[in-house]
Image (cartoon, rainbow, N blue to C red; front, side, top):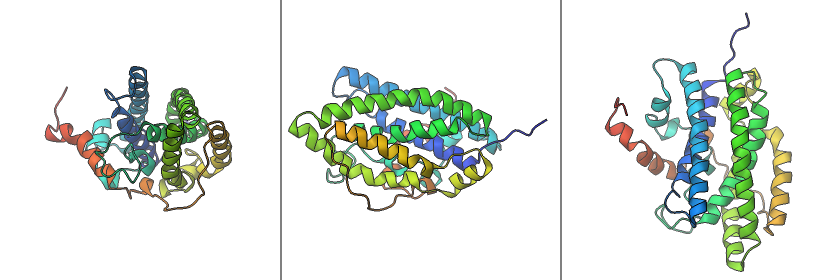
Length: 264
């Protein structure tokens, strides 16, 4: 009998954390969407992402053992233990808006979902061939969901970018702010390198050409200018985060930490 192959724990946590944190961010629009339809759409996208995170955390908990559960992994790890992309944790506004409590900017949300969903479509396609059968199944399911997320983001990117001068300017500003954070997509963390070596992971560097082509095509349709490359290289998937993740986790984890062991 062939031995069961599992992806490295750190790689599973990277995938789970990225989905959870982006889901939490999108969920902040619940009850605050610009129109009712978008309020519902963002809530559904959040539920998809949190559902993906749950499957990945369940798998990671089984790999870790030692009494770990999806709840302990989501609610009882601190900032440095999280492995999500930095892009996922940023608030819904640019760097000049002041604090994280500033008014949300829908253009920022749409651009982030556009950049991330295009990457995850390619990543889930690759991971559907993982040597880890359970991860491959999660990837196949997640791929169907993230294709919808991408379609939603692309539709709005074009509406905003090729809309009024005001909507165009705000969308371009969001793109200028967020695009540098995508550099993290193309660097291999130690967890990703280990997963690639054992056949359970993918090589994100191999996805870059397809991502660039798709991104450029949609930006052209949206009449947006792609920012010049460069800037600080984020390292969220190595546990080095922006100041924003701590505030997000404090809110997300507060109830579970106030009542550890509670059953709902």
